[in-house]
Length: 351
Image (cartoon, rainbow, N blue to C red):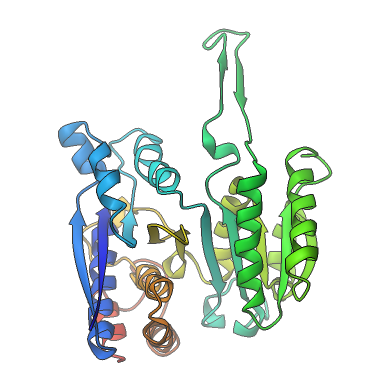
């Protein structure tokens, strides 16, 4: 029997609640498909920081490197200044574990929950591949004359050929496995003439050399957001930089039904990867048993697919679709018609 070791960071707010339901589903599907999951829990997050002043000890990063995958709930505490936990946990793990891909499937399961007129599941089924270790998120920059009328703030976007090309190659591989085999580079070549000159050249060079079977096209980021709303069926796989990817994936979440169903992965193909619901910690709903756990369950589905348990991952997705289409009244917290626990039970009961 295969065994998989999984680090679990429940995190803040409703994070532990949704992770509890994800683990419930994972354990049921693992038993059915005859493999074992070994969970190790960590308490990193706002509560620990407030109690100890410690965000993420160096020893923890080294320990997490021993796991193939991490399941994350959510990071963000109302009593902790914004940026401390996000930079100290999320960004630090993404960078130090070299999770250079952020993978976001955008898939509509039920047209009732799509805010776009006349759009159905066949219209919204694409993947965003976001570069996850470079761009504006490296923290490169600084202040001059801070706190004075002459203050200058500089934030630099760092793009390396190595970082851009490995992201592009990952995106080409994702596109190659899909039916339409089409990859769109999302950028801003008309204004960001240095960074996206590199992106565009590498995109065409890599595509022409090694992926001639994959169709290539380009869209400015502002046009991409427009077409997400007007013609989402145009997209198959989209590749973009860190900042633009961060923005367009939230829009993608909305057109697929909202944060309650949106999951993502921070991928290191040869190291430790981390999977999470992309919504925040939603502290106002914490402890009320009303938050939607489906995004966390879908994160678990992505995790299984990553470790090679493809059939089990497909089974989870099918179960989620059945529950969404047959049971749920809304994907919003407190409006589902069921509690957090009941939704988890319904998905687990589909196997």
